[in-house]
Image 1 (cartoon, helix red, strand yellow):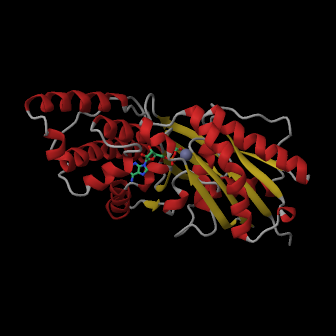
Image 2: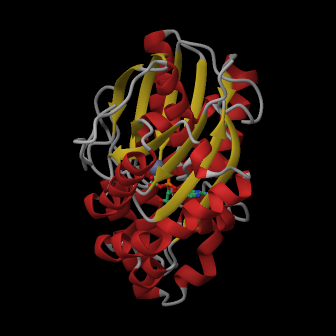
Image 3: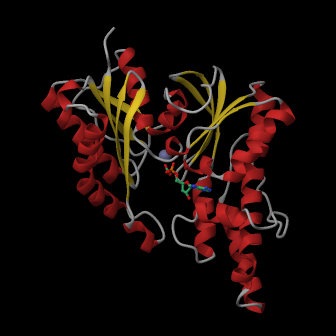
Length: 338
Ligand code: KG4
Ligand code: ZN
């Protein structure tokens, strides 16, 4: 049996990542996170692109070295084609194309959102892999989707955010409170010490399985502006309770739609992915649904939740086995549906 080595490259947003997989098993997964955006309170596309250019060669070298693989052993190169920031995607795409040409090995394009879902099939992912069909809740800084997954490459979006992604809702709420970027993990941290019912925020009314998060950010802004007028230290004095209330509201919005999707499809196997699935509150609520509603939930290892090249590599491996290769003329695309 042929041993398949995939080098995978991810550069869709602000993380430069490279991974090496042997037959779907991760040998290395190197992620260089860009610190430069912190001071701007969000990702600055031009700076992200430049940082990718600086990081990509050392990150790829490191992934090969820590996998103990020579580039001549590689079977194929997989890369993120989209969706993402064009300037960022271009760095990974150009690099992957050049290396595939130089080594004369196949090129495999990967959809970043499919990769967040198929990360569950990484061999060393914890727990059991989901069985088809399942519902994927993909929650990140760029996306919020409920996807029905019938097979590896047979996916249908049942609902998605009409405005801000859930990660943006976390990060923008944090920014309003003066917390550094990205604020999602900080809200999670403070929320664990606060009362989730302290400040009730309104929930949006959206038809079907779609989401909306922009209204929440506005109501948090107005609420805090009003409170700060009478007590300038309101935020510092109530930080834990505010964070717990925001997180509680966001989770309630997500779970409401997820339960609706389960009722609608009859599918009770749930797999979450994307950076926000690192959230401790979401992980806890999902685990509770196993006992409460008989769901089977799949939560990936933390390192496969946030942006990483290992998830690009597993899609590359699955496509390699299907002989699904890309042509040298392929280009990055910023908007790319699954
Ligand atoms: O998947 P990801 O690494 O990048 C994108 O593709 O967007 O997701 C990043 C997002 C950010 O918005 C970040 O604040 C959020 O995931 N995030 C969290 C937590 N950890 C990361 N949000 C809430 N709680 C967390 N523990
Ligand atoms: Zn992502």
